[in-house]
Length: 117
Image 1 (cartoon, one colour):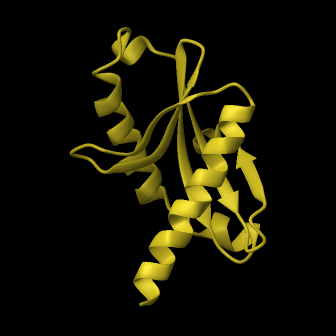
Image 2: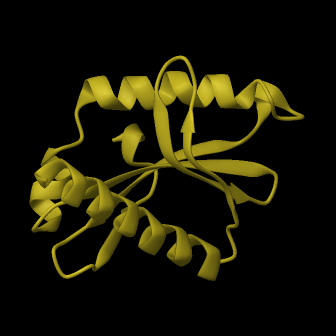
């Protein structure tokens, strides 16, 4: 039962984050995109560029941030390279990796270029 609740909470968090990107004028190109290397929660278009978004939900922003591991970042980056293979400019496409933290109240904190830090 707990797995089902967690799954639905994760989907709700992703929906909330996706709406936020769309409100800022970044349409969602893909949700839960899966490649051989793994899954990317959200992919948004920013003009000719792309934003790959990892969504993390927990009781607090700090706890959600703790759940982003180096191994996970590497997996998302590998999956992003797979996604870029289908883009007109391929690996020349401007990209950024964001982490969207969602707390227990449903508030969202976007860490832009989170993988660069």
